Image (cartoon, helix red, strand yellow):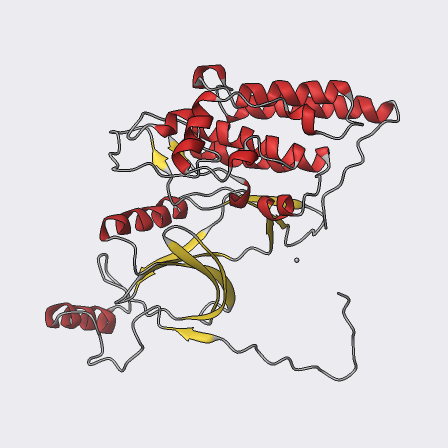
Length: 358
């Protein structure tokens, strides 16, 4: 994501070689006992420590951080992500580093992604551990996840068991409900941003993590003005095709509906048009009603399950946001209604046999 052999003699494993990245400022001998403070602050701090051994409010605490790069994991529009070792905490992290060629106007968006995600506390959202910068670039460290994203499964053209599928989307909707109640839209829901891992204590449990808040938007306050459209046109809702158009949480529900279509059929509803320019793909999102997914599901799919999938996708991917599910919880309720159909199918001895590719 092996069996363990026990020997009588201890086995010493050599740590793999890493590349030390100059993420923080280099550790150098401090010019004084209290580096980073002016003379007055250093004197005051020395007096307090000598007298009481305590730190008064407002005392600055400086840190020097170092990571050791292990390998590159991926790359996005603004940053590259590396697996890195944190020797201070003795753990691996996913380190996202801002690309050097990103315009200065976008630097604040990178920092905001880190700050927004760092303030989340939900089991289905990736945790941001630290944020910092060096003299040359910005970075932030996230929990390191072992597993694969849904896009990896789709690339193998493997069907996912309906029960596993519903569990994956349930957890994703739990994450969306959490951020939507805070008036934040992810704006980039797609298979590659839904990560499947395993529980650290019970490997039988599938845990879903929603990742990459690079273009998330706060839709509660003043309209954020942009000079261009951001997002993946394969999954963007029609209202996202308008520069500086008003959006809300329903753009995420639309994108999740497209993702559900793709997972349940192993094909994207407009994949035959992927060679078109992004603007043309956006036009399709605005104008073209998707064919029912049941047309591309296995022939042995029970009719009642196929009909439920068609109804779910039609509502989730409605061009008018007012015709979609009102929120993530409503979408989750309709999704879970499919479990009753599956239970009925199981009782009649015609249970779904599709499986998640290993």
